[in-house]
Image (cartoon, rainbow, N blue to C red; front, top):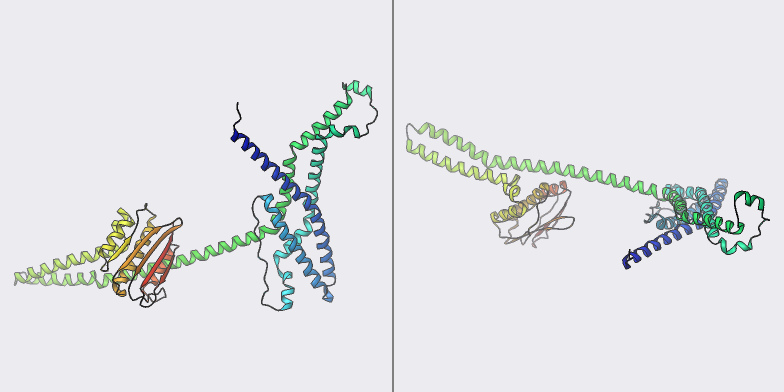
Length: 434
């Protein structure tokens, strides 16, 4: 079988990564032993002296200095474990006492939990350091010594050969047997060297990670969970508010429109019923007017239904629904909606509601001569923009017409912004996540 150039390159790359990781793990363990010894002595001595002399106040600066010493070595250790664990280690945020008095700033490390974890690591890191150091030194020594034994066997004095024992065991050439045996030992330790060194390095690195990084990571995860919970609560409140606003508006529109027409229709039909016997022509005129009111009522109900869930949006998608919406607007609309695949129903409904509400406000309040509507899909979401050249002055504050729209967008997990300086038009931008 022929070896291709690509196979050769891949093999060299694999060997290179193996040797590079072996060198990283070896230097990490070997340097960890003297560093761990230094931190152990300084951390215990400084703590003992600081606590012992704290009663006369001189011990407090010593204790703070010891903690800052431990913090410095902890920062160094976080940088050292990155190549071993093959990922960067986050740097925790220590307690800040800026803007406070000199004494509080000086003694601030005494109340910082992460700094005490750094000191604890400085004290107990020597345990995995010495274990890993012993294994790595022994494995490297036996691997190198065994593989190179044929080169220096002649320099080692050997006891007189026991020929009777050799004959009993079946050995013929004692020197060759000794060299072969030591070389085999070297091959074994060289073959298992990377596993042992890697295991020792990971043992020390994960111990350091647990003491110096894990608590901070856990704290960050708790903060992220609390933030997500707060966002969920805000979205829920926004959804409830948007739903309440929509229901009130629907109730008002039904009360002011179709309901009044139906009441009048019932009254007209009642009058027509009474006049059929005495004045048939007048009754027919009333019925004809009632039919006209019935058609107008149906048109209003269709308009209301389009505001809730237009059939064209469900059947043909957002682009077709916005095209129909722009065609019904009393202000000329420049619509930019490139073809896109169907989105989630909730996203399409929210985007349609944004444009519909914005166009309604433009037609009622802006005195604009033109409005531009753009819907663009990006990698992370949907960007909906509605801009007009009207009088401006729009706001998202409570009590304004766009407050309910802001609730609707936040309920969908999006963000709504309004730029509406007086006399310069209004630009409404909504970002909806997908």
